[in-house]
Image (cartoon, rainbow, N blue to C red):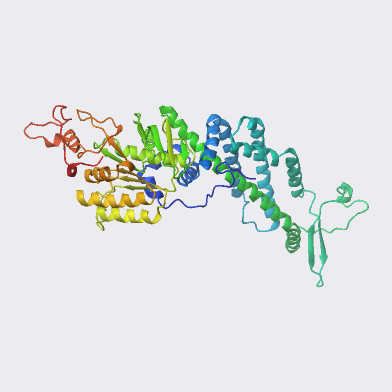
Length: 528
């Protein structure tokens, strides 16, 4: 049996490793916050959620397949959690049986068979629970994934199946003894051992006690004849070996099904956990609209950083952007104005969309990316083995060796480890090469020379967003479509945190008065 809740025609590859850029993605986009919310304290759910989140889909139809399943999971969460509990319970039963002495290290066929039968008996009880849930709720689900799952359960686990498997398991306990046929070889050794089903009724009790006429010849091994007991055990093992192997394979097959069912349902349970956290805070969520990789689509309404929403008690500020047909988005403006937050919101939303999840927005439409990469500013190397610019260029070189057409890359104040002129030139050359390779770029920068050059030379391909500053120096964390300015208003922060600059009582800190705006050059603009 197959689960097929994550793909319509195949199982998810749980053995596959994470994408090459997963460490930077996790750090730069603060994905641990998102994964913790999906896990709700369960390490298994966290592992499953991380694998699915980072294994981005690049086919819009595959994304919509998961979205349909997710929609019905959100509509009937109790059913999904009940099915997940059945799968998890089956694997927990297996663990207890292993601890009780069963498992893969059987010493002979007899113990192998006994352990496999015990596993199957526990699995059958769980399969009956799964069948009951299916009978109760199959008619209320319409998504292709869940309908196929329920149809498979009802077809494969019908009444005849349970009757037949129960009968087989009862026989495999061999409570009436084991009937084996064999032949004598040329050296009088036993060959051709075959396990036989009993053709007729069991022997009468009087005959089993040795009273009256006999229908078969028999002998009894004395209780203290250890050698004879071992020989008889070996003969029995040779007779039931094929059946023991087949039973063990059947147990492994059903165990694998429960393993896959738990993992694939586990992703959707993680989605339910995340939805609950966001709903409790009143965060808007929507199923995004994925577009083909070359459509040039990007637009959003009230897009918020999901990780910031999970971390902050106050609601995050959302942004509305229409960037269709703009392969480059440059974000400039006031320091601490929401530029990096918006950049992270795009990266997190893209990952959530491409794994089939909802996004924290009122609407979101974007191309599917062949890969998602980040190049964020880093602290200086504490080991002093390389400078900041050297480190930035090395990381960019690694990305260049991995990135391909129709990918998405997010830059956050990159190439800031040198002066204005050199940093702007390096950034320009890197971004121009990426655009020529059909790669979409989002770039947060405080370098006016870099932004202005694209404004002059590539205005039709570039969307310019600017973090606004209120007249009194306050930030509203909203981005507007505006041309870049030669200032990031870094002096606002300088004076806002300036109690330590007090000189003869002339300045005591706080925001600048609205009547005394301050402009600073690009070289003084600080990090957002």
